[in-house]
Amino acid sequence: MKEMEYDVLVVGGGPGGSTAARYAAEKGASVLMIEKRQEIGSPVRCGEGISLGWLEDYGIKEDESWLIHRIDGAKVVSPSGFTLEINAKMAGNEVGATIRRDFFDQMLAEMAARAGADIMVKTSARSLIWDDKHNVAGVKARCNGEDCIIKAKVVIGADGFESQIGRWAGISTVLKQGDIATNFQYHMIGIDIDARFSEFHLGSIAKGGGYAWVFPKGEDEANVGLGVTLDMIKQGGEPKRLLDRFIDKHPELKKGKIVEQVAGAVSVGVPPDITVKNGVMLVGDAARMADAITGGGIRNAIRSGKIAGETAGEAIEIGDISHINLYEKRWRAEMEDELYRDWMAKNKLVTLSDEEFDDLISALSEADIENLSVYEILEVVKEKNPKLVEDLMSFL
Amino acid sequence: MIDINRDKCMYCGACVGTCPVNCMFLYETRVEVDEEKCIKCGFCEMVCPVGAITLIKEAKA
Image (cartoon, rainbow over all chains, first blue to last red; front, side, top):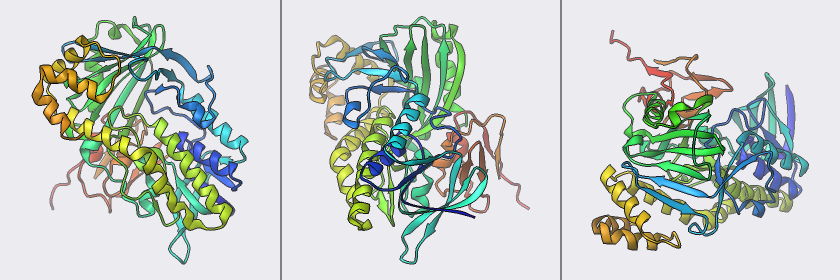
């Protein structure tokens, strides 16, 4: 049986995995990243909308090979059609874009490779190897259909929503039904849309526990999708059914031609209490770090991937594996408040009725908001619906 | 038992990440269920975005 040995093994070749592999390699560790599929980034399981302005912090240069369409802002649409337009100025100069996730992920993997990390595709981790001190010492895997053993001092679980590595290592990444969003999406061509804006449609269209989205990919094309939380579902196949209904009722989207369909689930919860255990660290979606309001996971995967990669690299450098425990403190200091704030806001938003969504969005759209801060929003809403503000204040 | 319609399945892994007892595994393009570990909760059926999973309740002997 083929045997390999590395300082750091990263399982999963998405944004979190590639970023962790890159930063660990830059610290001088020997790094292997394995990806179960034959191609990095494919098939895409993503709405492909991201914010810009933070990428350069991670050495990522904007490039039109993957950054295919820039947007000016977002429109949040209530059940009766009230629309709140959020522009870059209101959102703290943060603008957005629609990307090609397959090319984006490949670019990140190439950066990891250039930093010195080895990469093996069509290689799937099947179980963990433990040492006599009850630490994880690597994985048993299938590499191009052959059994192989990959030994490593540190294993980074970047295996996305499936989150197998963490659970094998004894970290509970099980989510409550209300903290799981299941999604379906079409890539549509030939639609007359306002390509300057992403759209978010709230309310009973997604059973109150999610939203439908339109993310433009060009002048006449977009990713059109819908996500709904599991606690709202009584029958399988619900995201596809609700999306088909949304499109059927929409005069423009109805005319679109479908060239691709995408399915997947995402965490809209918060990370487990422990993300480092027995020599294993979890990053990104595997650690339930996707944003609970939007379900967006790319940015937090890259943020946590960098911290995990650097911490693992340092542990190797100083020859003390217990140093990886610092990862817990480091990512929480940077990300935890934000994750909990958005999770609590999500838990409130899912309780709103269509009428309350209408009240909220109409009040906000009429007001002259310069800065989309939470407090400014609450001030505006208070005039129209004091009860709603009272509820919202309780978690702030 | 858990019936997976492989023609409908888009092997997205939604069921795998949702399973509370981790009895499912995605082998590239094929989801397998460990029926011994399965607690028949039906979450995998509900979470499947395309309705490819059916929990079949076995008749009592």
